[in-house]
Amino acid sequence: MALVSNLLTSAENGWIASLPTSAGGWYGFYVSFDKDQDVKMYADMTDQSAAQVGKSYYRIKQDMGTDLVFDTYDCNRPS
Image 1 (cartoon, rainbow, N blue to C red):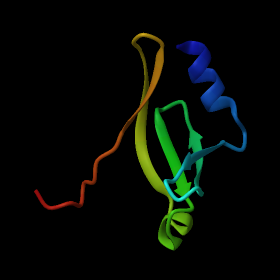
Image 2 (image 1 turned 90 degrees about the vertical axis):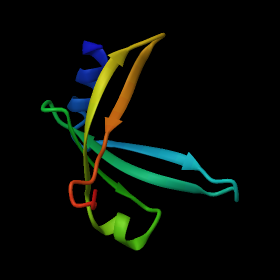
Image 3 (image 1 turned 135 degrees about the vertical axis):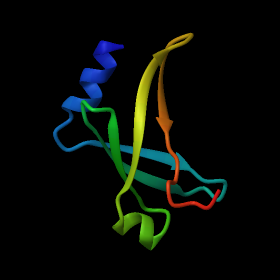
């Protein structure tokens, strides 16, 4: 788990991830992790998500392997 944490946080320019769509295209995600378990992400799904940073928490846990978990919630959403 320490190795994964060090890899995630040591990437100077962050990480690029992609997610395939059913139409045959891809969505791109541009992600940076810090040692306080904060993550910042841009995504090319919409103009807004490409221009406005999304913030979340992440954690690394041991299961049948090492899992990367995003703990995201919207504090401004009505209850």
